[in-house]
Length: 509
Image (cartoon, rainbow, N blue to C red; front, side, top):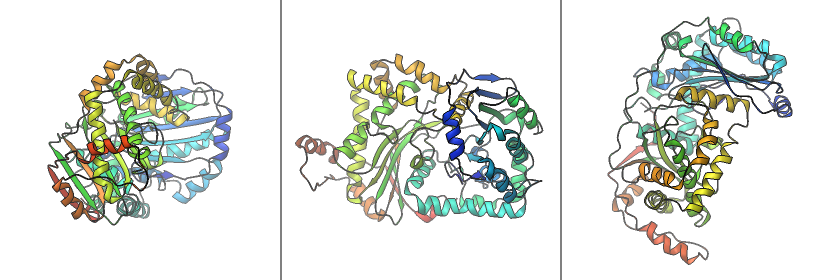
């Protein structure tokens, strides 16, 4: 089961080694994308024996009715982790296993994505099962109760107990978008899931799984007539009405608002962030990519945050910044498609630190963001970072699914191919443009912060006192590091509010 965004799950997980080897052997440069009529995006690679398919519905957690949070995710699970009118779930698993194929389902705030890949020798029977799953879900009570319990377990066990990283990631989004359509996890809330009935799922499916909300994508070595045939099969869906749910502006953050999630844990995980007024559809996004990379892209070791907090001071494992939502960061190294959003947020992730160093780490990260805003990069730093972004982004489309997914996300934003736009725009950027973006979009005055910590009351008292938080070292440290430490440890946090939330109450309602 996939848990990247929500437990919409993976249908019929299977071994992929034979398929991966065949795909690697046949990889060829892809031709230009061929957007076709009828909501179909194609990305042919004739020499590749693998075919990737994506079905993207404009239906996400923003469509969850109030009090039914999690309905979009639960409905998707009833497609990917349940039986159809013709086959039970176990029969579907048994049929797909020898094909080394699966149908994955993932739900984010704005979209639901069903995806899969298969060797072209099995494309016809695979497509029959994919179409059957989407068009003929059985919605049996047994499948419904099982999926509902598994989704509840994802919230109460995986998020609350199993992963401090995912817990902090979801809670910072909930805080940044409090009272907003994005303000609950795609998996829902405990109270919302408990209130959902099988009739709610059937109604959601009928209303949102329509042709008007569907974008079909196909990549790889498929027969020339395959995309049109797949789209025709899916024409059996109701017509529906085009258009996405209305989205209010992201709530403004005023002051420095802290949420301390009180949990038995040996370390402290820190997130802070605030809404951004731009997405990939805005020209400023591309200079901001360079700013973000300079601070520190996810799972890279070159960034300023990583250099100052980990390399020089040994504070923790990872220190990264983000200018848009990153799906399931504990399990991904490069950005993944399938999470397009009309509103984004800036955030910094500091993970994990020893409790006695929590305030020092927070101050050090805030200092780096403020310094970049005020002073920008040098020409040499800019050129090095810009060149890294250009070449690193070439790795984001290593798989058919990713290349197809990024292209379909670009349809969401109404832009040319995102991967192509990076290669076209970023090399032309100037130092002034990048530093101007840092000045415009970075700030440390108004943000939400989430700290997952044990003994939250003690940390609250220390944050309120706001006295210096020096770091002690067990080995000899460069004098320059110690001099800079004074700037970090004396930095005033000035929290506007501090709320303690017991972990058992997170995602409850």
